[in-house]
Length: 394
Image (cartoon, rainbow, N blue to C red; front, side, top):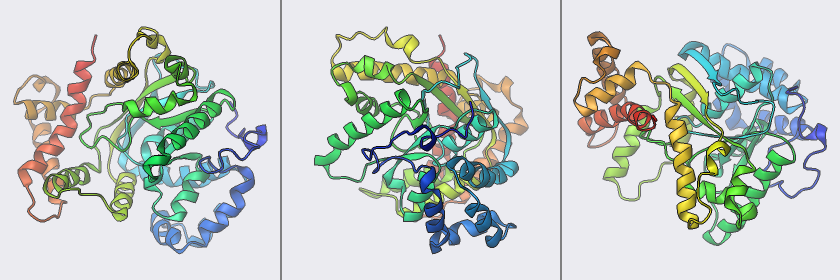
C-alpha cells in the first residue's frame, strides 16, 4: 500500500463532525509546523534531542514537509531512529499468521512505553511499505499545546478523559463512531492500547470499559460491533524497560501518599526516559484475529460478563505472543524462589540482572525510600511477563 495516500487525498472527513478529536490532515500541516516552530517550549524540549543537528537545519526540514507522511518520515521517524540506534539491539515485527497489513484493522496492544509502543509499530509498517496507523492518545498526556499539535501531526486522535462525569457517555459514543468510521469507511488502521495508561507492573489486562466504548456505535449488538473492527491483538516485548525505576517509584508513592497523582512534569520525564533509555531487544508480534474466537462467546451473557470474556480472549492472545527474554526467566526464578528456568541463563547473567535492578533502584530519589520494596517491584515487572505467558499456553 502506498503510504502517501491519506485522508485529504481520499476526500475523507470532509465534514467537521470529528474535528475535536481527529488527527490533522495535509491541508493543516504548514500552519501546525509554524505553530510548533514558534512555541518556545517545543524548542526547549526538542533542540537537545536533535543535536548535533542545528535548530536552523531542523526548522528548514520541518518547513519542507507538505503532507502528514512527510512529517512522519522526515521528522518523527528520523528522531526515533536516532535514539533506537543506540539503545535497541534488535527490532522486528513478527507476523506468524500472515495478517494482511494492507487491510484496515484495529491493533489492540499491551502498553509499556508512552511514546514508543505505537511509534515503533508504525516505523516498522512504514519500513515495510505499509500505511501507518492512526494512534489513540489520552488527553491527559497533552500537557502542553505543542504536544497536542505534535501528536495530531503524527496521525494521533484524542481520547477525552479530563471531562466532567456527565459528559463521559457522549464523548465515548463520539469516539466509538470515529473509530468505526475510520476503520470501516476510511479503511485506515488504528493502534489502541488495551487499557488506560501503562500496566506499571507489566501485568497486562484489557479494560472492559475500552470494549464497552467500542460497542457504543451499536450497543444492542456488542459482538457485531467488535467484529466490525477486525481486532488484532498485538504483543510488544521489551527486553529492558527504561522506565521501570519510574514505575517502581510511582508504586511506592501511591503506597505511601493517599490520592497520589503524577504531575505533568512526571509524564514528560516518563516520555523522554522511554525514548532515550536502553531497551535491548524489542519484538512486536501479531496474534490471532479476535474474530476467529469471538463467536465462541455466548451473546446471551449479561453485557458485563460478555465484555469480560472478550477481554480475556484478547489478554490470552497477547500473553501467548510475548517474546521471553533472559531477564524474564531470571526474574521469575527470583520472585518465585525457584530454579525452574535455570537452564535459560548463566550465573553470570543472573548476577548481572540483579546488579541492573540495583542500579535502577539507585536512580530513585524519594523520601522514606524503601529499597527492598522497590527492588521487588522492578523484579516483578520482568517476572509477570513470563508468568502470564505460561498461563496462556494451550
